[in-house]
Length: 246
Image (tube, rainbow, N blue to C red; front, side, top):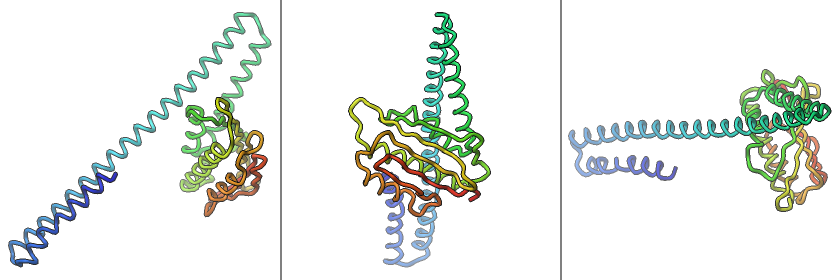
C-alpha cells in the first residue's frame, strides 16, 4: 500500500519540473510541455489506480473463494463423520443409537437452514464459516424459527449488524481466561420481540476480565443503531437490541 502511494506521489511531483521551466522561462513551448506533462500524469494516475483496485478486488475475491472452500470442506468433513457413525451403529445393530444419530443430523440441518434464512449474506457467511477458523472459542448458535431479516434491514444496517456481532464475539474470545488446550463456549442467540431483534451472548462461566469486556461492548455499539440493552459481563451475559425496518 505504501509503495503504491509512493509511486503516485512521485509521478505527481514530477510535474514540478515543467512547472519550474515555465516559471524560469515562460514561452509557448514550455506551456505546452507543462500541459502535456500534467495530462500524462493524470492519465498515468488514472490507469495505475484502476489497475491497483482491480488487483485488490481480485485478491479479495480469491480470499473469499478460499474461505468458502474451507467452509464447504469443513461441513463435508462433519457430514462424513456423522454418516460414518450412523453406519457403524447400523452395522452393530443398535437402532436406539442410530435414531439418536439421525436426530442429531436433523437438528444440524434445521439449524443450518434457520441460519441461512436470516437473510443477511455477510452474517450468514460469518456464522457458517466460524467453525473453520482455529479458535479457542466454540460458538453455539441458536436462531428462532421463522426469523428472517432479508426484507427488514437495509444493506448498511445488515453490514453493521454483522460487524457488531463479529466484534462482540472477538471481545468474548479475548476477554476470558482459557486454560491451555481447552475451548470456551459462547452461546449466540437470535430472536424477535415485537419489532426488534434481540441478539444474546451467553458465555460459559464468568469472564476473566469483566470490566474490559463491558468497556469493549459499549465501545462496539457506540453510535450504532443496535443498542446494548443488558450487559452483565461478570456472568458472561450480553443482550443487544436491533430495531427492524431500518
